[in-house]
Length: 188
Image (cartoon, rainbow, N blue to C red; front, side):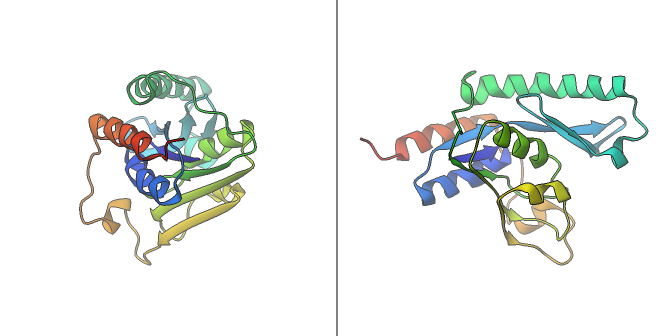
């Protein structure tokens, strides 16, 4: 099973799923943005509510502030589940190999709660895959059974540096790719 981290990871996951003749599903997680600095994440939350908070990055935030940020991100995740999966739940993962694909790994915090979500749902193997990352990312990702990164630039500064064209992948493009992947699957 191939899970693309919505949004940009779904585009990459589409090609992974095609190559492996595997099922493709969008999966949701959102970075927990630091108040006043939305690009700086102190953790992430997955669609099932699993959260990861980096204690070093969140030490100045109160538990109530963290809970409020998590609630806002979960509300956005719910909207995405409606748009991208028409409110359908994630498929069963028990005993399956799951490949979590993102468009790149900067800090890796978004993938940490997704890894935990897959473990809780009984995935037998969880592989994290991305085209690009820096040399260092959240150590909790090492809990995956494997991590596959194609390029790790020595002077890594952003995921977009490894792409010729890197920009917003729209909701409509995501829905179309997921729909197209259903048509690509072999028919019984």
